[in-house]
Image 1: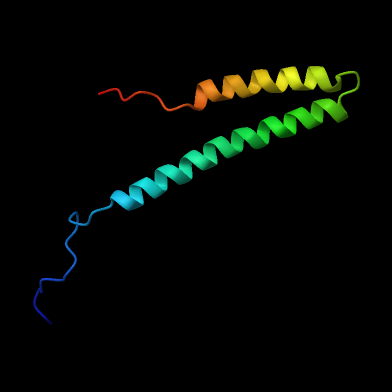
Image 2: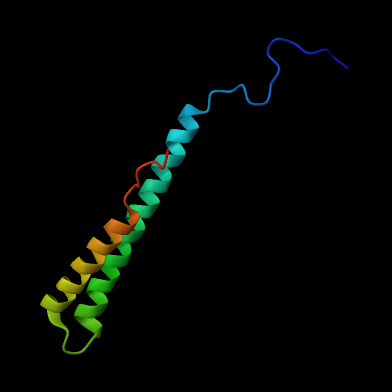
Length: 80
């Protein structure tokens, strides 16, 4: 078996800054994209599938849900 060389992997020594940033970006896009899709689907379902709702009611409900979703999903300040 070969001895340890200078290029061998050592657990915990790798810089993972780029991987961490990529993960944060992916999670943010997933979070906000999901909210946009949900609000869009809600709008069109209310507008076309609910009898008597119409455009104005569908838009108003969608805006309310979008605002609530934004408030729930926005980044919280660190607790440190």
